[in-house]
Image (cartoon, rainbow, N blue to C red; front, top):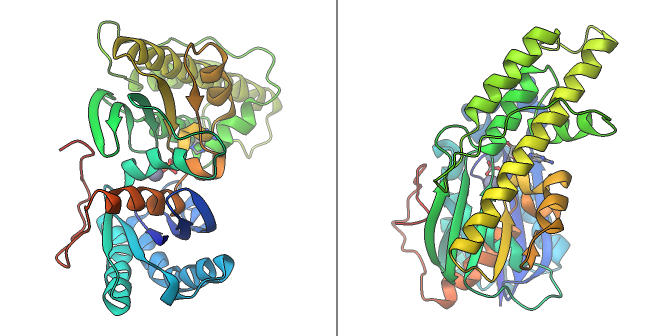
Length: 340
Ligand code: KG4
Ligand code: ZN
């Protein structure tokens, strides 16, 4: 069964064709990073206009790359939330029009659920074993989720303030490293011999996370050491210090994410750990979470961690198998929760 996935929840216009929920036939992503980096972050109105411009060429390329015609598509899966309303609406309307014209089922996919299902894609390992402990780390979310079966979720921990990706983005900005934060912090940290020591926000006694205090600690350290602000001035000492602080921040985030995920996995008897979301593309986090894990860990390839439509098509396959097709009244929900 070939499913066409469509994803436009944030600043990536994406379309993909996936067979039987696992085999990627094509995966096309048009990023708007260059446009938004001028403003240091995503401008929602600009994002929705770009989706409008890009969605048809991206769709055509996804079909061409997969060597399939629209007539060979069995269902359309689309992200309907959470995300930016004006961005989501472009994908949802495109999906509705296609499903109606082709007379095939329309499936609505929660973006976070999509991130989880990236772990079912292009793998030669047997499918993940339930119950699983999922760590979702993206620009808007830091959640641990106990997954007991397909589509069955229990929320374990969440961030009380900034999401991990959001903290990466804010710290990169205050260290003058650019946008998006995750990749630039990862790059700046490479080769740093002595990462600066920063606190670990453990939030003992709860499964929740908190990153805003760590961000404030970075701000204080950056101001005290002269590493805050614009990096274009060419001050080598300040640049070196900024890189050391960035590396220390990355260490702290990785330690806390890994420690709390292990604790939750043990507490709830998980058989495997799954990573999902843009921050799961981080090499330090990927290494650390595998290093000492007593149970198997799965992490999608980096390109499948950040926003893409293959994960939406994969999730759509399992939703459809469970009889969860959407109606024509499907609407976007910018705050769609994973667990109702
Ligand atoms: O999942 P995603 O692509 O979009 C959302 O659903 O939010 O995640 C985007 C977030 C951004 O905050 C970005 O800075 C972060 O993921 N990110 C990374 C890396 N690549 C992307 N964070 C750390 N290391 C990376 N390599
Ligand atoms: Zn995402």
